[in-house]
Length: 67
Image (cartoon, rainbow, N blue to C red):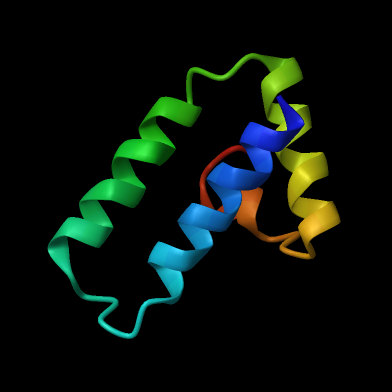
């Protein structure tokens, strides 16, 4: 699960960091991911939070509505 969490975080950060931040498709993708993460179990949320810390993107869980 930790590997999947890291990959998801890296993908989200890549989408978010793109220069054309107003791309509707990018925004829609991030919103869809955030909506799916709302259904994450506590264990999954904790794994995502820990993975974000290890990747140095501590604010990511809050940005995605996980915490």
